[in-house]
Image 1 (cartoon, rainbow, N blue to C red):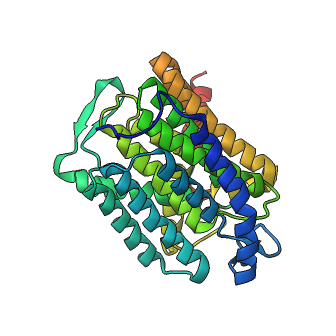
Image 2: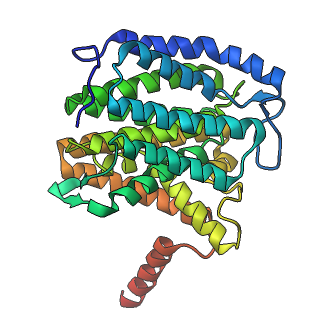
Length: 360
């Protein structure tokens, strides 16, 4: 099902320029207000910043998106669901940034936001995978949609640990989705993705290292929810904007999330207990802050290019994707990101080498 009401043959340049300018202007205003009202990031053993830095920069991203959508996009049923659901996530994050809320409460509100999408007709009915495979979700559509929204939302939230990282990766993901939407003639997805990417890019002018403001949970939860929702919109009638694409683009935060779950389980930690063993933390120890952000954004871009390569030549695209995944897996094993005993690929390679020596 396509959304209706985008006022452009392709996309009006004002729809890209306006959110950028709004975010660019609002961010320093938000920064000054947040320091005044005490909404700044506190230093602890996990933080990599020093001093009082605003942590509600997501306000500028959210407002730039809402204002631009209100001006240029006609609100049909699904647009209303998208705005209501994303607003729930934004205010959930904002409250958490201001007074801290319990993880279980936050998860409950994520489920409510997902239910809003389902109510307004944004859910997974048929999953279209590469090679022409189609899976009719049927009765599990309800559960799958909730898991998808909560999973992607938290994956983006988890990578918001370095200056410009969550924002930079989100912009790349949104631009790739928007670009593929052009090929698929999905002008609804194109407009939403580019409006959000533009507003986030305006914020990055202040969030790039060394950051003078953080997006906070209000920004990361909002962006994560929006990316998951845009992906769900693509499932309805697209053959390329499938489950595989958002998973591919968000491969790093998804791997990071799954690794965190395994790591904390093996160490007997609580699932929602924070630590400093995420991919970006491990990379930063070796390459520094700025280079780590560049590396992770670069890898995300490569995953995006593999999606385009797959469209042109499935074999080449698949090869590129597998090569990147192997590189990430080897890094996880060598850095003991999950556990010092977790090294299946390296262990397999060593066993092959030992057997080869015996044979030859």
